[in-house]
Length: 140
Length: 130
Image 1: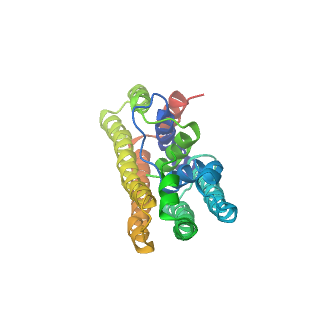
Image 2 (image 1 turned 135 degrees about the horizontal axis):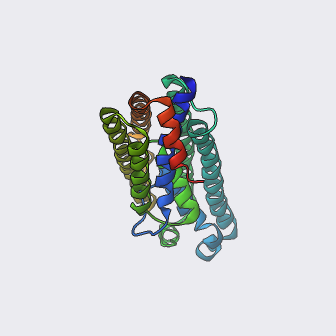
Image 3 (image 1 turned 90 degrees about the vertical axis):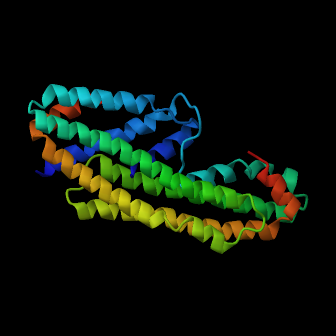
């Protein structure tokens, strides 16, 4: 019975993998996790801060904020991926409560990251002028 | 469901977007495997419906978390955005993932009920991407 449970979860997980494989042939960006979008926006700006923020000390602090966001989200992705692997591959959960626990850990990783992200966004605004903020925002 | 995370991760890594072709192909392949290995018509219909529901549940969850992501992205563009506004964007985070867990548990149970262990093993073999 336990093996059967694991197999059925494994099959459903392949539906997941198939969705994941839809990355090919893009027409429009798919919905993202909040942490994924946050990572993308920060990562694209790290190397360009000096072009926008003239004051070297503030530029260093702004860059450090973006670097922290990028690392925070990558760490979060690693934690989330670990939970997904637990759910879909290898030793599949046998009981609903185990499945709930995995989802809970996944969600908590996302929540922790976003809580810190909100604080970093506040710091970013403190370190930039409105004009600098707008120019950074224009970087895609 | 939980698969939003993995798909988002991979799509982020690849920088690519979405296309329903591959998932449709996979579902079609899974349906063929069910048709080939599940002899009883009622159980065959149940297994097929479960695969369809898993696909729909994933899409629904994807849209749900996508709304939160869009909300954050919008605030990120505003110099005057407040912590309270950010927190409002994320009020659905826990309910969305809790709902996804329950969906998966239900779908998993349905699949286990629908097919016999040897049938499930055969379907797994046929849909194995390797």
